[in-house]
Length: 138
Image 1 (cartoon, rainbow, N blue to C red):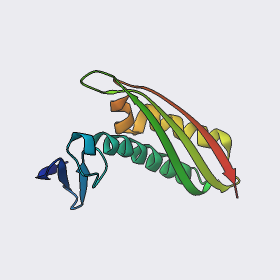
Image 2 (tube, one colour):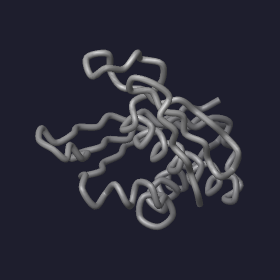
Image 3 (cartoon, rainbow, N blue to C red):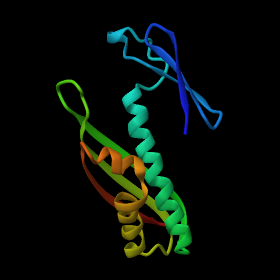
Image 4 (cartoon, helix red, strand yellow):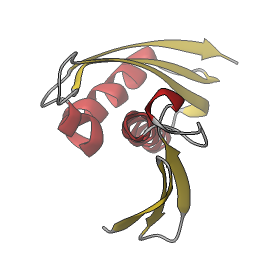
């Protein structure tokens, strides 16, 4: 996996991924940024959310669950001193579908957190990661 980060101006950077995608990251205005994109740490948190959400959807589909939507709401706390690593992350899953089995949803989330989601497992080295879920029937 590869990625290249280019400084644009002020505190703006463009990330170019090995898969051919690009996005802008920017600092907060109080740190010289212009708020043109997410902060680098926000992209890290979003990456963990995307990683675990994709795991859950794949596991539910393989388990023949009729899942129609999966959302993960993340809230993180950071250390007050440098390096300001994540110290806690809570992930709230909202899974929608028809006749979803709670035990299968619970197991999919558990498998993602314990075995498959490399992003959240890596972040779990510095942060206490918790999760809960709700199932919305359609």
